[in-house]
Image 1 (cartoon, rainbow, N blue to C red):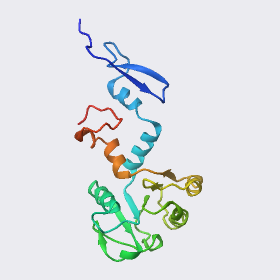
Image 2 (cartoon, one colour):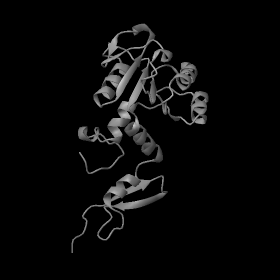
Image 3 (cartoon, one colour):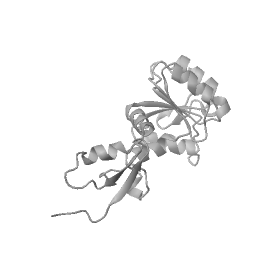
Image 4 (tube, rainbow, N blue to C red):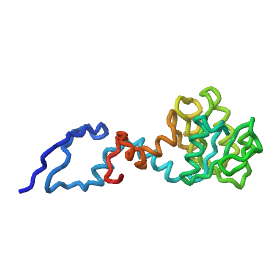
Amino acid sequence: MWEWNTHITLHCPSFRTSARYPPGPGAFLSTALWYRALMTPFDKQMQRILRDAKCIACIGVSPNPVRPSHFVGRYLAYRGYRIVPVHPGHAGKTLFGHETYARIEDIPGDIPVDMIDIFRRSEFVPPIVDTAMEHLPALKTVWMQIGVQNPKAAAKARAAGIEVVENQCPKMEYQRLFGELRCAGINTRIISARL
């Protein structure tokens, strides 16, 4: 008879219970479902947003390669997203293979921006969200970078049926939720058999 030699106790706040892993012979839950159950609803929401988004307008992105906004935009472009740079000081320049626009209003209507990623301070978020809702008909998600939160703007966007993520970085969340950080040995809180 084969038995598990080591056991790990996992605490899953969303289920308000503890469970033993590995579950042992005869377990009802497949391993994939077990791992999926450990993701929070917010993790699942962010994973779905990042999976469904195709075109992202990066508001306040910098052409300076040492700036975090540039690094995030470059990474997202590398992962296959179309990045539409928006920065008034660099309008007309090419960044990540696309023209930089001075304002959200300047983005042509034939570019289907479905997500905006805001690299501005929290007090500047409301007019950005208002403008995006007015001028980007395909907008589905407003994403605010780490340290950026505005409850009033978030509530207004949610009331219009737009999903909102605050105080998170899409680059970091992509790496965490799609398994890239595990290769570096970082605890992503997401268990998977994939390396």
